[in-house]
Length: 274
Image (cartoon, rainbow, N blue to C red; front, side):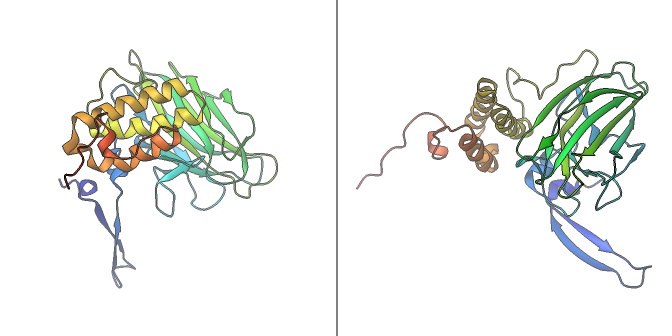
């Protein structure tokens, strides 16, 4: 019953038939611990928190990888960090690298995600619902992000597919960012800012979403996410210290002039007396 992720360190034990056990410590990032299950985001279920019927991958591991790179570290899609996402690589042949999900009786209405490259290749994303192609992206190259929303009400099977850009599969590593199902009757908490943020987890996600929407060209929505997150930090300084790097990065992406914590309240610091 120990929350090992909250402790910030795990131990990977390699055991060769119990003859040569080796132990290697590795760190678990603050953001990974924050978003480990998505529990605080009511109304949605992340694809990476569901069991997969099967998955395939065209290079590296035999299947897609959840919430990180296969070699470790935070997954970055179009150079943005996603703590909830799927790393996957296209095949050389016209065969999809896929994640297959059984959603029978799940009461999901919509599948949403951001999709893009993690390397410098070219790929195509598809979503199949009960065998029907309901989403097909154009050929995507590094630096661009596709946003998708697919109707899945009453579906039994959903497949996330990745194809190469018809020019081989070199550097065709891609990612599904925040892939999530929205439950019937619920609103997507990652779509637009809530009236009030409730936790450090939601605030961390808000800074990331501010960056994402800025990259997608929606400056007004991006700024709304940023302002909600900044307001939460100003009101919860004791819990907000670890979020300063993410606030700084988001401010840089939004081209906002923020020089440090002293400006979060809009009040100047008192000058030191000589």
